[in-house]
Amino acid sequence: MAQIQVSDLTFSYDTSADEIFNNVSFNIDTDWKLGLIGRNGKGKTTLLNLFMGKYEYRGSIKSNTRFDYFPYSVNEEDIAQDGVDLIEKWKPQAPLWQVMIQMNELNMDAQCLYRPFGTLSFGERTRVMLAVLFAGDNEFLLIDEPTNHLDSNARDIVKKYLGSKRGFILVSHDRDLLDGVCDHVLVLNRTTIEVQAGNFSSWWDNKEKTDAFKQSENEKHLKEIGKLKSAADRSSRWAQKNENTKIGFDPVKEHDRSMSTRAYIGAKTKKMQSRVKSYEMRIDREIEEKEGLLQDIEKVVDIKVKPLLFHKEVLINANDMALKYVGADKELFADLRFQVKRGERVILSGENGCGKSSILKAVFQKTNETGHVTGNITGYSNKKELEITGNLDVASGMTISYVSQDTSFLSGSLRSFCEREGLSESLFLAVLRQLNFGREQFVKNMEDFSEGQKKKVLIAASLITPAHLYIWDEPLNYIDVFSRMQIEKLILQYKPTMLIVEHDITFQQKVATKIVSQWGRF
Image (cartoon, rainbow, N blue to C red; front, side, top):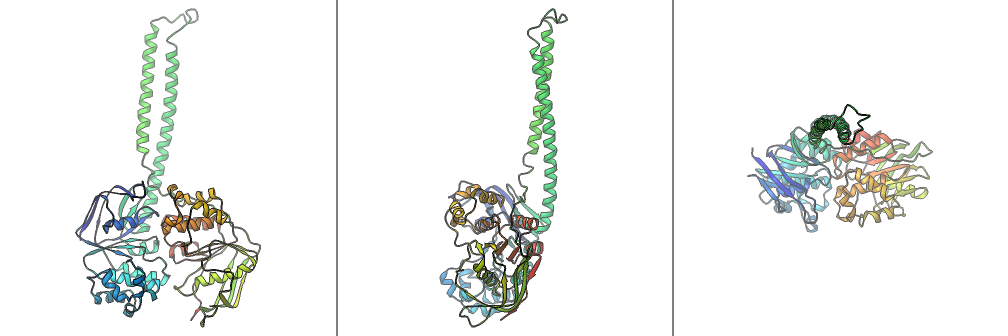
């Protein structure tokens, strides 16, 4: 076991005046299974890149271990090469036999290494990279979002595999993965960094208790400050009133006073002013103790959504439905049955390639005849792309709000985006702020946003769009844990009718009223 010691780490990008890290210090052990948790934009991937030595920084990172990073870089030339040829590029010291052992642990046929990398599915590519990553010795591994775009089965395989390993940092927003894998967490709070034993759920439970205590202490301090300010103000007014009696008196009306009384009045005033000073000092102490109490509290701010109420109970009805693309020889699947009723949240769950997104496209194809879809439907046109057999009935006259899994079409300013989509700019920006979008991002073009920020743009646009049905295709990829909890909370509160493709197990368990996961496949 060795340690990685980070001392007074300070870093900012040349293009930004804001510091990502400011005099950060912490120690971690190289045999931990460490989950790295934080909001989008807090510097999780940046920290991994600092470990890899990609950027210059102030402070020190001390360790006698080597680092390796997932995912490996893949360019257009790599896509055409066999996986076995890429091993030499990614990890030259890794023996092929060790890679094959790791692939066996990942439930993968070693023959995948002898296929062009571009022909592999997302899940297969991820597992090949992980097999290569863990084929070395004496390394501390940096794993960045390994389950994005993976189906539930592939996620389970990766979770079981990582749970059997040690010596890595895992960046993930998947709570089920963090709970099933990690024995420690490194948390990038709003203003501090903490290291704690346990997984995400144990850390979150502790955080909720700590935050509740801090909130209670904050309220106690505020009450005490209020009392002290009232007492100080009262004593100050008494002192001033008393001081005003020193000069000018009527000997007839105030026959008991003389000029010698001024000294007495002055002493009394001085005592009162001393009391005011004491109150002010106590107020300063209370304020000092109060400062910092709430700096790291993650407020899961409520977001409001206004779904439209449709007059029919059943919005979508599929009965013995089969799909295939026009001109294709084989059907994607057959014998699919499901309904989406008013107020339901139906989640489509299944392996990558089983046709989940094609089901959404079939709904859009039907809606185009009688309804309206808001949001960019990538690759969708007015032409019939799908042949639908069996029955797919979509209620006429519906407005559908759509969130695509693709963000590549986002470009230009947020203002121009609002104009194109017909959105209220002030409301749109307010929702982005609630999703922890920094104001400094508002002046940037969307092509400069991170993937998590781009997804928040699409989700915010959907949330403020009144619709009868919300169709979201893998909305949570790259979205941080705290924003996921916000989204879950609003869905449970406002109960919009939804049809969702999403692999996050925790999200499914919390929001779904129905999960459709089995249908005939070819």
